[in-house]
Image 1 (cartoon, rainbow, N blue to C red):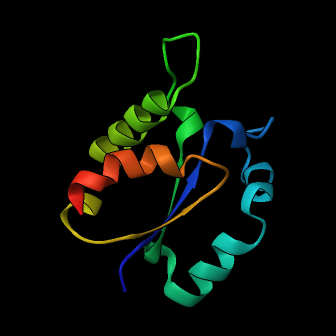
Image 2: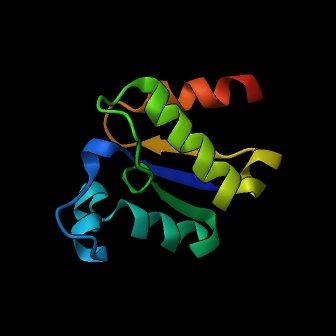
Image 3: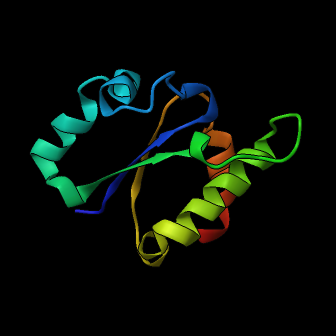
Length: 102
């Protein structure tokens, strides 16, 4: 099966960077998916860890952050297919990055 990528957006940042605090974003979904598809089958990307130097946050900022994390940490995803589950409304930004790949 193709990997499942869970994307946490900027507004999904928890006050504490602990796994327990971040787990509240998706609840038990990541663990349920890992139980079904294995640890390597589920990847979590926290876009809020990739800062922007601009004052405002735009779709372009989020798209650039997604581009950076894919190329720097998950380049293998760009070589094949993967499924995406996005928290909040950052789907448009991720779509703007992924659209040329489809």
